[in-house]
Image (tube, rainbow, N blue to C red; front, side, top):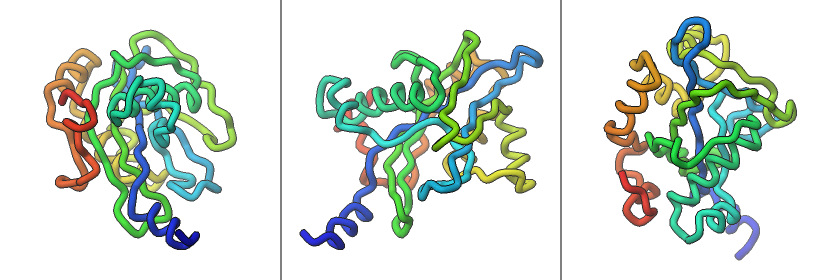
Amino acid sequence: MSQSGKEEARALSPAPAATVVLVRESAETGAIEALLLQRSARLVFHGGHWVFPGGRIDASDFTAAGGGLEYPAACAAAIRETREETGIPIREDQLIHVGHWTTPPGLPRRFATWFFVCALREPVTVAIDHDEIRDYRWITPRQALLDAREEKFVLPRPTRVTLSDISVYDSLDDLEQGLRHAPIRVFPPESPHYRPAESGCGK
């Protein structure tokens, strides 16, 4: 296959990826806050935007998951990417699968991304590389959405929608209980890239 053919094939087939919404209760107010990271402006995909930790599922993630199923590999990638981008260790049993987003055709990078929420109940220290990740902030979902509407920073659509989904919860207990019973948000709704039964996902 020619180089142009390979590039076209990559454009047509989004790479599997995983994203984690880290949430905590503010020590000052008790309100739920989410961790947002600012990507470097030099990055092709969402450069300069504020996003959740996450990235592409690597071959090592399938190995770590002990098989060829995508959902366990997505969990492994979620744990690895969170550690690499934030320095925060998390466990698979903390992950709640809440969504799956596939980048529309025509963009320079396409991903089929598993979305997870992870509630943090103990204090953590965020450590970013100040290279690919330029900054971070803990912020309530409602404030983040307001700041985006006022154009103080840019949130990609999946980030905005996910923040909106979790903004209705007032405590981590309510959030975890609600999300474990909520339907999975899939975009586009009939995405051929979301195959939970084949991927070993229980939801």
